[in-house]
Image (cartoon, rainbow, N blue to C red; front, side, top):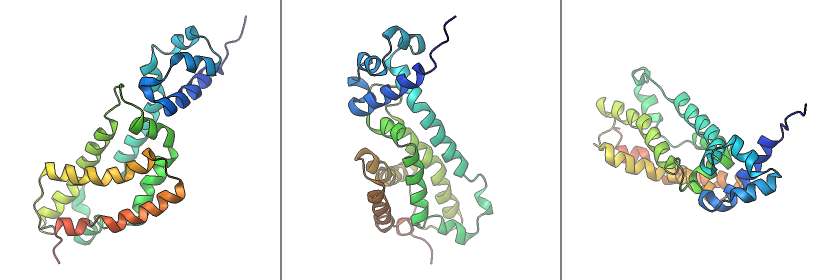
Length: 205
């Protein structure tokens, strides 16, 4: 009895990832993927219903890792924070920005596919969904500080979403433009100089 070829699945996924990275989901060709992976279309369809399911098989581990990271960094009880800690959480610290860049860099291929090449799939709005998820956690820090009288500027949920969307775009764009790690490190320093969240919140002195 012939043994199943266990190299087929990784070959399909590797070739599909390269095809999607180069051409995007909509222009990618299953025929090219099969040709490069040296498998028949029947072998591919035996494993995946179609192009979108194949794309999702590649990016969904990245989505799961990102959401796990976001939830893992969330703090449930902000009441445990001192006033100084709450204010300090809004200070732009390079090590915090580098943490996100390092994490996304570790998942670079999947992240780029989601940001840049996912049009036409059910994950095409991933970057908006991630911002919304980040916002839901971040705005709680503002609301806690505002209730304590630490932050004097009243900011609506809608305006906060706009501000934070702009901030996260500065994290996304280096991956869309394929910056090197050295370029990203320099970019991280600029982000820390560019965003003055304490000024936006009008912190009580």
